Length: 256
Picture (cartoon, rainbow, N blue to C red):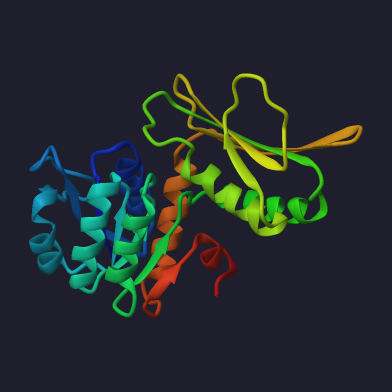
């Protein structure tokens, strides 16, 4: 039985992750933490604990994996505490700065195993593989990245869009990244990135390759956050007994 703890337990993603854990016969929720709602009961009659008490909760419940979908500042501290407690990690929080990611690496390396990804959807991870193939073949084409999310999402561009840009840059070599455009300008050798925030869009990502007489669009649309939650739980099962290190969702899907 894999014991799971969830931070951000009462948030949209935390709620879905807990539902996915409850459906899995080889997993058990042992702790749910949130900054609000302490004392409320979750699936399996687990009471929500105050996130400020994370160290005590992890020491008491001894989960195998902590799944974190919170905000960047909280996630860095959650990772540090979990690593101190020897708890492996699945981190889906986005909007992390390079400095915050560096702090996470320092906490994790040599101590626990962690899967860190801006997107746990299986489809998105296939999308990224397709981008790498297309970029390699279409290096001279104009490339635009367009992403759309709900109007409450704070970070822009999305973590998935930024990961897509890195994949494209790896194939293209030195190239400028332009975030939006205005005024009079000619397009240079660049990747254009555009973020839309509207309504209740779960997550749309499109990469457009446009060349002489044709264009190719590679697109992923998330219809429900369940796609992210089920992928995170899949990652938790995979990472539960892994050697210390930082892994990606691609490692999970490749079963390495």
